Image (cartoon, rainbow, N blue to C red):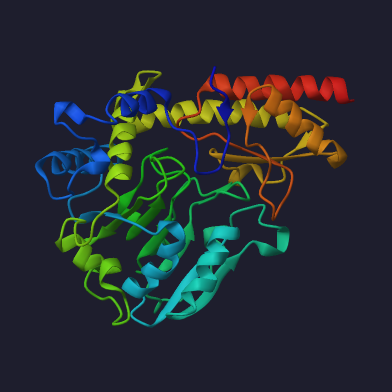
Length: 367
């Protein structure tokens, strides 16, 4: 029996995807070789790439005036790649809502001027700063927002309309830890990027979706392989792409297209399912005097649920008991402590139910 894996990333993948990949490991569609052995320019892999590209476009309803790029380096690399492509060496605004946006803010300083338009650091990153309070620079090249902070469990549930805030500035979103978990309003986004290893597939693939009019303004120091315009011109084949990670992402997207929930399908179905999972877990925490979640309710992440035992001397005992019960990777990030349950698309409702049952039983026996 497989355990329930609550890792924040690399994270759990759908079992049927893993089983299909295992079947196709050595001989994809009777072509005589496995996907990781294929030439990225060969007919077989091109068909995989094109299907994955189209499925992603369908699932997220990506408009035609956006380019979908399959790159490498992860979200950490994009903290440098985005300012090298979009800042034009000018000023960039950052909304600092947790550890990842904080890392982005620090990295961008190597390539452009930066301003913290808003920060939630003073309260320990327990809420998303209200957009009406952001101090935006009308001359900024773009505004950076991490729409889901994996470590602190803070999520932006409604992408802000920067024009309504008085600036006509592209919005860049890091949606690594909730990509493909809900629809995206592309009218409000200039660029979105995501590391694959949370909700898309295995580590190695980095997804960038960028508005066409933002291409072609990279700094001279930008490496060619990270120049969005060059990558787009070559259909993500400027250098050898992460072929196997793209294949696995494609299997996940096909799985996602098959999902249904309450007469919904695809991303809308998984969004409804994720909300049920998150509500179940948050309710168990809120109704207990043994556990607590410190994030403002309006800012709570649907994907990453940090929680704490009031008696932290019981932490190790909790983790050992959870592991014995088949509930893995629940230890919180070392920077914040406590526990964290990452309940991405691939986590079934049964996994959250098992976690809640264990938490309630642990509270009963430890009290």
